[in-house]
Image 1 (spheres, rainbow, N blue to C red):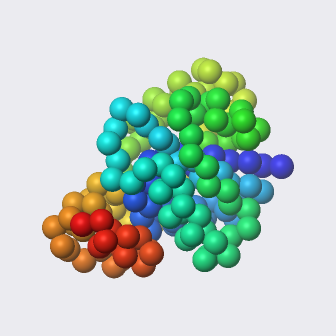
Image 2: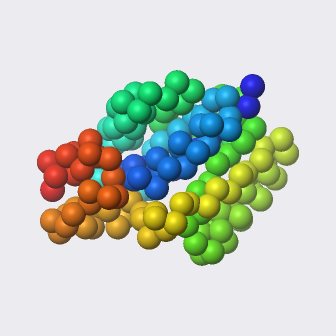
Length: 159
C-alpha cells in the first residue's frame, strides 16, 4: 500500500492545498494530511480546529482514501507511525524549492526509505498562501477564489 503524508500548517487550508490533495489522492492508496501543531508559532486556528475544518471539506468532497491528523515533532517520526514512505510537498516558486529541498535531504538522512515528491501547484494558485489569505480576509477583501466556502465563512466569523 502506497501511503503518503502531505504535511503543513494549513492555517487556513487554501484551494491551492486542496488542488495538491486532489491530485495526490489519485496516485496513492492512502493520503495522510498532517496538520502541524508547531508550538513556536501562533496560528490563527488551533491544530484541532484546522483538522476539523479539513475533515469537513474532505468529507463534503467525497474522498475515501484521505485521513487528517494533527502532529508535532519530527515529520520522519510521524511518517513512521503511518508506515508512509512518501512525503508530498507542493511548490509554488523556485524560492519554495530551496527550503523544501534542504528539508527533503534532512528527512532522507534520518530515514533512508523516505522519499519526498515535489508537486508543482496549478498555475491559478501560484500566488496563493495561507498568510496572504489571512491578510486579505482580515482587511475585508474577497477570498472567494482562494479558499472553500466553509473556510471563507470561518474567516469572516473570525475577523
